[in-house]
Length: 110
Image 1 (tube, rainbow, N blue to C red):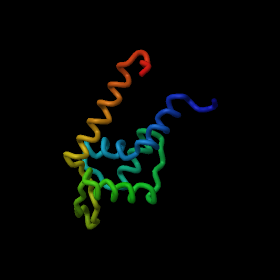
Image 2 (cartoon, rainbow, N blue to C red; image 1 turned 180 degrees about the vertical axis):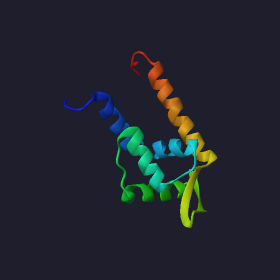
Image 3 (cartoon, rainbow, N blue to C red; image 1 turned 135 degrees about the horizontal axis):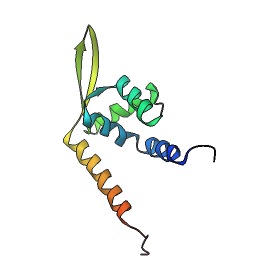
């Protein structure tokens, strides 16, 4: 392998759970799309294109995980996304699942 294993895991998890990652980011602070793109680049080394991000944000909003509000800032209108209680419950379920998986030392046969 030429890549760092940790980086490979981060990229795989990020790609497969991009919706959870976005919810986690906006749970910390409400954000607009471009800021989400920049944060994921800086924190995880993942480049999310506008064509992937905005349809996902629209789906998250349609499904009730986020809400948006148009806010003016220095003559510019930004659509800022914030997490809902339903979105928070999804993030909590994700964390609980990870905790369960990490706490098991062996995989039990069923």
